[in-house]
Length: 140
Image 1: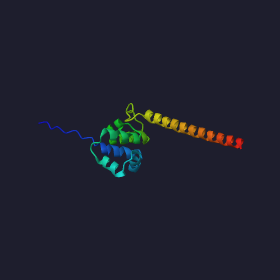
Image 2 (image 1 turned 180 degrees about the vertical axis):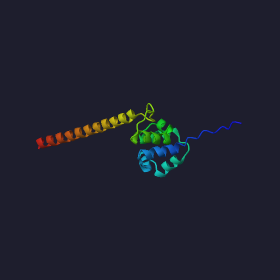
Image 3 (image 1 turned 90 degrees about the vertical axis):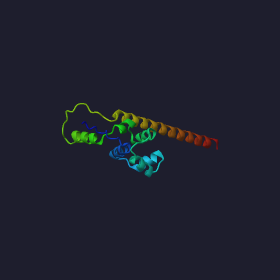
Image 4 (image 1 turned 60 degrees about the vertical axis):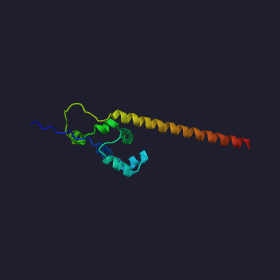
């Protein structure tokens, strides 16, 4: 008689919590960025299932894709770190990332571009104000 084992349920809340911890982000930071309380984030991390829209928002705050959270495997991540950062060499083949590192790079470039545009706007406003002051001094 064959004994079938039930596949282990994916506990999305636990995956969110572990990924958040590994990224060094606190619950209150996630809560603040989402306009929620820290207790709400705690409840989400205790939930076995998480609504896709909430998952997407949390993934955005963590800087990863929702798929990265869905596919997160703590054991595989720890094994990867141990095999690649403890001074040992591996010939396991290509690295299979749960997220694309280029996405993080592109996001950083986008943020820098946004900050640059804000800085330019601020400088233009300063120049306009100074020109107005000079014109007022010339009139009087």
